Length: 90
Image 1 (cartoon, rainbow, N blue to C red):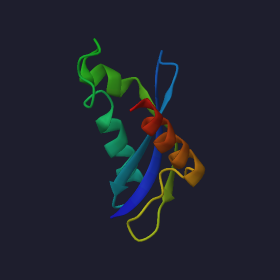
Image 2 (cartoon, rainbow, N blue to C red):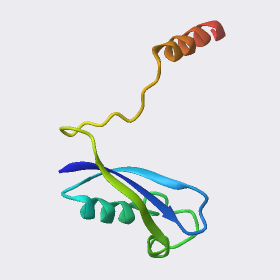
Image 3 (cartoon, one colour):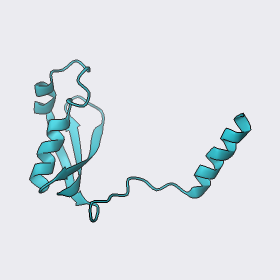
Image 4 (cartoon, rainbow, N blue to C red):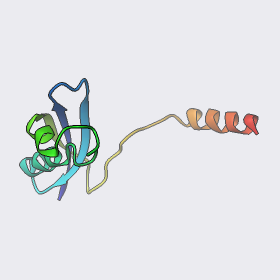
């Protein structure tokens, strides 16, 4: 299994979903990402099949190395500032 970043857009939605998907290949990852659309949030009004039909993979690429992926990097100073602010609130 490899890790892929898959970007999906659903018609009439103003956002693009970024998903990290494990798959045997790029085609498998895209299929899994489309299968995840709506299934993760079933209470939004449309049927799962309709949302999936109206969704498109707009980009996908292999990512990560050896099963690991950096999702975000934040400077240590931000964490220190958060801790400082939390202590001041106590």
